[in-house]
Image (cartoon, rainbow, N blue to C red; front, side, top):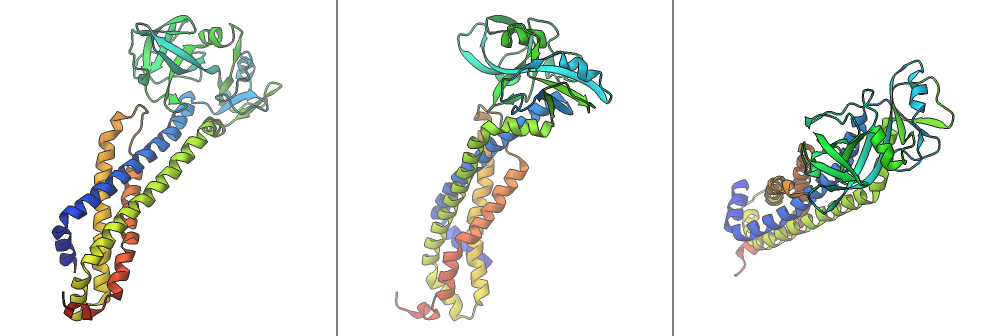
Length: 351
C-alpha cells in the first residue's frame, strides 16, 4: 500500500505540488510569527542578564525600573555597598529617547542605559570599548553605526567608542550606553538620581522607601507592555495552523474521491482495512510533512529580511515539523472515512 500511495502522489503530482506549496507558505508564516514572538521574549532575557545583578533596588510600590519613571537617589548605592554580603552596587538610569546619527536627518527611537562604570555592570563589547567619560557612548549594532561615528541625543553630541550585540528591548529598539553622569544630564537635569540600584549579593537591610526586585521580576515587568503583542502573535499562529490543516484536508479529500475505485479494487481482492487506512494516512503525512520541511527552509531564508533580530530555533523547527505531521494525520480523517465506507462492489461498477 505504501508503494501505491507513492505512485498515486506521483500520478497527481501537479495537484499535490500546489497543495504542498500552499501549505508550506502558511507554515512558513507561522514559523516566522513564532520566531518574532520568541524574539520579543528573548531580548528581555538578554537585557536583564546584561546588568549581571542579583537584585534590583527600586522605590517601594513601583512596577519596575524599565516601565516606570520613579527615580531614587544614586547615593543609596553607597549605603547598599556598605552592607554585609554585598559585593557591588551600581546606580543605573534607564529611559527612552530619540537619537540622530550625525550626517542624517532621520530620528531614531533608542533605549538609554546610563551606569556608573567599574562596578557591577560590565558590558561585553562586540568591538571597541565601553564609555568611560561624558561625551562617549556605546551602541547596539542594530543602530547601524560603528566605532568612530557620532550621534546626538537631547542636543548632546556623543562619540561612539564601542558596539554591543543583542542589547535591544521594547520590540527591537536599539540601546545606547552612557556614563551615569551623562545620563543624569539628559534625564534628570543633572541631579544625582537613578532609576534603580543593581546589586551584586544580598543586602541585610535596605534604605528607607526602597525595596528589592529579583531579576525575574524585573524581566516579567519588562515583558508586561509586550503581552498584547505576544498574545496576538500566538493567536495568529494558531489560526494559521488551522488554515494549514484545512488546505491539507482539502487536498486529501479530493485525492480520496479520485481513489475510491482504487480502494474498492483493493477491498475486492481482500486487502485489510488497516492497510488501506495506513496508506490513506500516509498520504496526508507526506503532504504536510514535506510542506513543513519546505516551510522551515523558506523561513530561514526570510529571517535576514526582518528589521527585528529574530532567529528560527531548532525547537520551533521541530515543533512545526511535528505539528505538520499531526495536521497530516488529522486532515486525512475524511479520506479515511471514505476508505472505510467504500463498497467493494464499486470495483465492478460500470464507469
